[in-house]
Amino acid sequence: MKIFNTQSRRKEEFAPVEQGKVKLYVCGPTVYNYFHIGNARPIVVFDTLRRYLEHRGMDVTFVQNFTDIDDKMIRRANEEGITVRELADRFIAAYFEDAQALGARPATVHPKATEHMPEMIAIIEKLFANGLAYEANGDVYFDTQAYRSHYGRLSGQNIEDLESGARVEVDEIKRHPMDFALWKAQKPGEPAWESPWGMGRPGWHIECSAMSMKYLGETIDIHGGGQDLVFPHHENELAQSEGATGKPFVKYWMHNGFLNIDNEKMSKSLGNFMLARDIFKVFDPEAVRFFLLSAHYRSPLNFSREQIEQAKAALERLYTARDNYAFLLDKAEDREPGADDLAVADMARAMLTKFDEAMDDDLNTADAIGALFELCKQANIALKPGAAKSAVRAVMDAFLEITGVLGFVKPVDDGPDAEVEALLAARAQARKDKNWKESDRLRDAMKALGYTVEDTAQGQKVKKG
RNA sequence: GGCGCCAUAGCCAAGUGGUAAGGCGAAGGUCUGCAAAACCUUUAUUCUCCAGUUCGAAUCUGGAUGGCGCCUCCA
Image 1 (cartoon, rainbow, N blue to C red):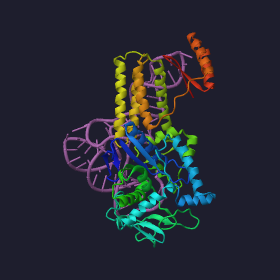
Image 2: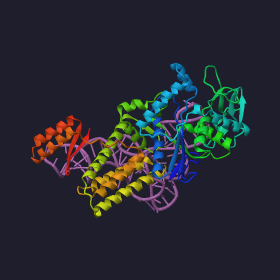
Image 3: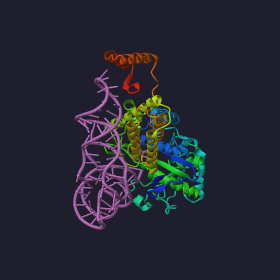
Image 4: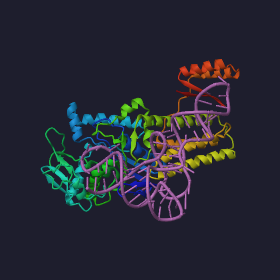
């Protein structure tokens, strides 16, 4: 598998530190609000990456943090008159609801910043020992000047370039404008923790270094997040982590492109965002997932109502295909496969290979979805009434394998209830008698009960909806 | 100012040197008692524009135009 590494700016062959095991860390949300549809992109992308790595037989340990202490958390909690902890608990719960709606499985571990103070302090102490940190008025800063030959590798800029465009106000306390806070002294009314530098709280970047190292070790395989995290967040994580351990921090950095609205970045600061949960009230979350995977993860993607509707229509075709295979599987003859049946099974395996090849190429989900549609197209042509069960089985297996990775897993409908079963039986008799009027009446009756009936060569086929 | 990305049909989107995947939409057709689903046909002689390299370019090079991102909290 090839992965585009932000640090080298090229696709590299993926080889985890330990063969067969993948250590994956993705920066999670600051839990001061519900997440917006732009935030949904990394959630879906990295969930899909994880599912694909598992599909390829790898054992994935996936860590995604919650930032539950920072300026925005404190401000919002004060506005609402609740504690930071209460605020965090509320939005963490909401996060899991919304992420689940998108088909994102929980990570292996979801650590919280506030529960990892000793680990963060330990890294800062190492940075002091290595001459890369200094204290000023109870704050602790990373000394970018002392690290200047290494700083800027990820974002591809040196300190001078960064500085020249810096819009930050010169901070009297810091020795250099690019230095960033590792620890902030407590201000009145703020939550604080004990540290060797007095009461205070961690800077934003240090938590990810600490939690990544704690759960995954000093060198991990993949660190992911949105493109806007490259600088300063990931640059700083890299500096402080390697500055502390002297070991490589991350083998592959992966960054997803933005979800735009009207060709502009959707973000909380621009105020042009739409909450994921509000969108789910109008659109099927699985259609949102399909939409998010319909373009390559590094490309910008423009959000619109029309796009989601197209995604929904495309998904319907897949659901229908799957229902048709399930129906055929039920009716198919369990016999020795003939040449046609073997050809269908070969085709299904070929599409699975095509899917893997697309995903192997830096998680090309758009191309991979093409393979899924081609599987359905070919199967719809080839699976005629009378196909052997093994042929249908092969198609169904490939379909479920692929949709399992992409996360389009809408469950199969329950069978019809007794009332509908009775109507079906009556309609079968009416059809046998060529009593079309009665047949249509019964079809309408089932429609009223929420079932759609179709007539096929193998008899009536019902589905909910 | 520095760093970087993008431009493919009505819409979305793959394709990075060998002659334009796939989906949505639209039009016509086959099948069907009628439907539905499915299938078939049509919908880019051409990839923003101009020059160049090459037997061959959507793909490489140079330039132009348009759009976006990071350098400040952000996915």
